Image 1 (spheres, rainbow, N blue to C red):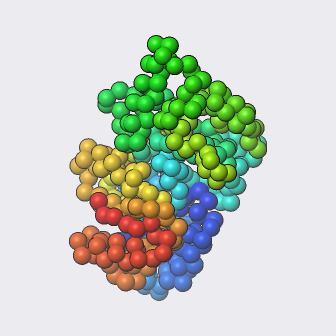
Image 2: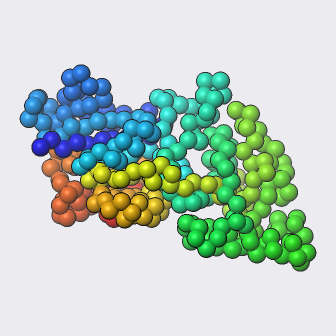
Length: 322
C-alpha cells in the first residue's frame, strides 16, 4: 500500500530555504505524478510500485483537507504566528503586502487551532507585517476561558487593575509605571499608538500591551493579547495518521488545543511538535527519514527514531511526540 504524505507549505517559508530544499529533494528522489500537479511518487522510477506519494499544498483549505485525509502523514512547514495559527499566502508574498494587490492581508489570516487567545509582538509582528488582529480583552475572561498560564495571570492582574481604577484607588494613568499592568498605548505611549504602517494601518492605536516587555533597548518589544480560538480545528476529525507541526514552539502554541480536539473526535492521530525555534528544512528532512531511511512513524521505535534523528539536526526546534 502506498503511504500518502501531505506537505503544507506556509506563507514565506515556501519561497525560502525550506521550500527550496523540499523541491530539490523531490526532483532528485521522486517522479512527478502524471496528470496531477504538485504530487510526486517515491522512489524515482518506481512507476506503479511506488512506496510513497507526496503531495505539496499551499492553501489553508488544502491543509484542512489534509488533516482529514485518512491514514495520511501531514507536515505543516511554516510560521506559528506566535500561536495565532498556520498562515498561507501566494508565492513571494512581501512582508507588507500592497493594499491594492492584497485587499485582505494574508499575514493576518490563520488556520485557527489555538487557545482562546495568545500574546504576540507589537513591533515585530503587528507593525512589521501591518496586521491588525482583534484584541483579546483581559478584563473579560471567566473561569472557563481556555488560556495558557501566563495569560491567566495577566488576566487576573488586568481585572484587579480595573477594579482598583473604578474604586478610585489608583488613577488610570498611574498604571503606566505599574509592573504587571495592562497598558493602553493611547494613554501610556501615544507616540507609538500613532505609528502608521506602509499599508496605512495603525495597529497599535486603541490597543493594550503587557508591562513585562516595556522596552529598555531598541531590540526589546511589547506583547499584546489577541483573539485566536480553534474554529478551524473544530471542523476537523483528525483522520490523518500523524501531524508534524514544523513551526516555532508548536508544542507550546498548539498541543493542548490539538489534544482537546483529538479526544473529542476519538482520533488516533499522533503529533510531532517542536519545543524551540524551528529553522531547519524539516519537511525535506522528514521525507528523507521516512522514505529514504525507511523509518515508520506508526511504530513506537520508528517514531522515536524519527524524533531523535530530526532533533539532532541544527535548527530543528527539538521535537516531542504526543
